[in-house]
Image (cartoon, rainbow, N blue to C red; front, side, top):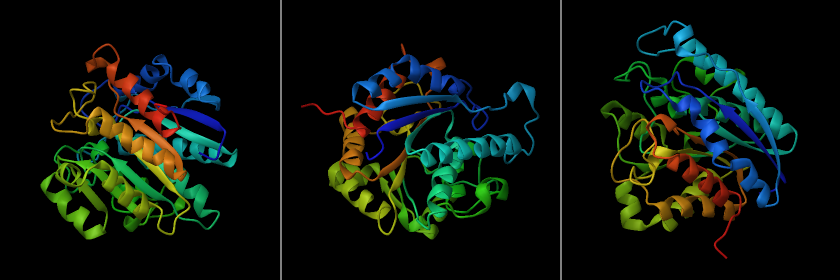
Length: 304
């Protein structure tokens, strides 16, 4: 990566899902040695702490079909500003979740920074789920199932228009990897928007190297680089048990690392987030440790 300074930003959002505990994800990854291990790779590390996020017990959940909408919008607005500030300072932002609704803020911050430079940004979204519901289609009303649709301009204005513009990314520069659990009405959004989706079957058939080469080409076509959003439930639950919505048949340990190694090889990653680490249901912090290892691969750690 070009920046020699990494900015760690915690986003302990626990409003976007039913299962509680992901607000402790940033702490779990810090406990797993994230800062120290990044420094060992030769980077300067600035831990910027956590953004302020409302606690579910202290606020009303609001609309049934978009639970905690106003609080999530406020948290994501704060996160967008923090991410943009780190980029302005020449730092590489690494955001620790929190549920996946935080990606609305991370992508807004990255996209806004590049938009002010008349540049576009691509997105690589590694996830078992499409995250392309809207309040009208969501079976649960949980916003952690809506962030990618918000990033491409579909959803509540409170989320799609953070920083005053939408979409944050052209769907033609957005890639989904690891897909294997999609709600019926999400399928039409994936097809209609033009987001490129690689399901687990396509990964099985073509191999992760081929998938990642195409994904990086799509995300960097006419852009200044890409943001990578890595939901730990993309990895098979045998390797990453501490996630809120586990789905069998996910990425293997080595496939997950190859994703990040090829991201590093491209030298075009502009920001990174790791989300949905839930220590409450984890096994001796295994999922957080894996998350830290994946960040290391994205930043240049090699076997030899």
